[in-house]
Length: 140
Image 1 (tube, rainbow, N blue to C red):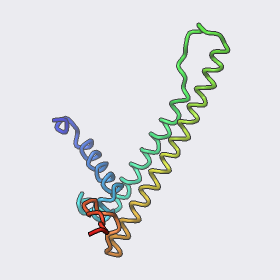
Image 2 (cartoon, rainbow, N blue to C red; image 1 turned 30 degrees about the vertical axis):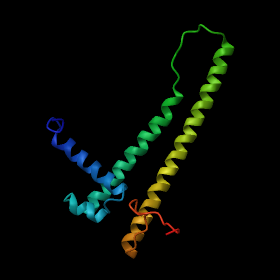
Image 3 (cartoon, rainbow, N blue to C red; image 1 turned 45 degrees about the horizontal axis):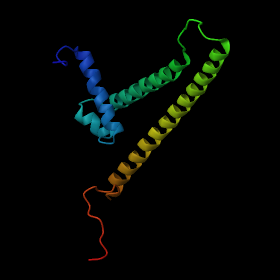
Image 4 (cartoon, helix red, strand yellow; image 1 turned 90 degrees about the horizontal axis):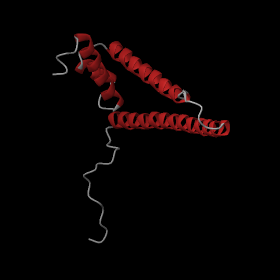
């Protein structure tokens, strides 16, 4: 029902974002995505770049928002506010550091997933551990 109320442009953008998600998850490479979604390889690359840029902008916006403190009525002592502001700045710095660490970890995970997928495709060897394998029992 929700897709019926969307414009064709919104549906196209949603489809392209799903395509980029499948690429990032390693389910499709650029050529496969172009064939499956009936677009050129250049279009796929443009959409990947566009989605990555939007994600980067949203991360920057989120990182900037914690720096905005709400305006309060002055009902407490100035010492209380200076301590509270110092704690808020420390927490904001910690959040920002953790967000950067998370971003690095996500990029690293995506890199390793891509390396494994490419190696599997080029070498024809299954590298990822299959979850259905039975544990080795040396006592039998």
